[in-house]
Length: 297
Image 1: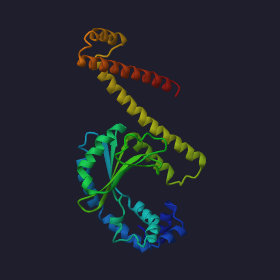
Image 2: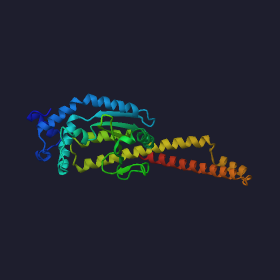
Image 3: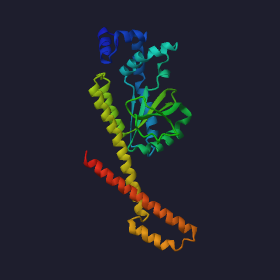
């Protein structure tokens, strides 16, 4: 893959690796070729490992769908070239002997959700199954301005990446790392588009970068709207089941029950009924707001 001068030149061009950047890695093409060959020879074994773990993870009811992949060999070599200067600063070096232990994204599983709120069920499932083999505490990448209350008190929130995803890294039974990412279908779609647009072309054009940021914000809005509508429908159905139909129904209930207000249980029933009505009215207001918002888009 990297034996000939042409293969090496094409590789550097594909991944925007300058001569200076390659020299800074202090690696030779022979060393990199040995790593590439070793990794390729284990690809089928890694695929089988991922399949076994994915079959366990798909049993979680909060998971809509999933994907798994063994890292592309070219992307592995690019990462080693890019990361090795930092290892050199720490007195270490990425090599054939240690790259599998040092890099945590050689194998990856993505769990896809319909709604952001489904994350909590998936998180609890993952912690129950794999807490003992976590290599590092889980964390969430978010965008500036995102609502992070779902993660508060549960996992660390980081605002370093242009995409949204929750990350777990576990040690497999083969003693190798598996990275598990959890995100919504919206986030997955945007991540694929962003990766396709941003990285191969090394976008530095300010206007294009702004367009990409707008699309990213729209992705977040889509997730929030989906979660809101899902919650609205669920709460609406609950209120109907509880007999909340209109103001008059609530008023008549209060009139009938207030006569028995010396009973504490009845008092509580009245309070609960009024609270249900307030929740229902709040949902109706939000529904009107949603209609007005969509009308002007």
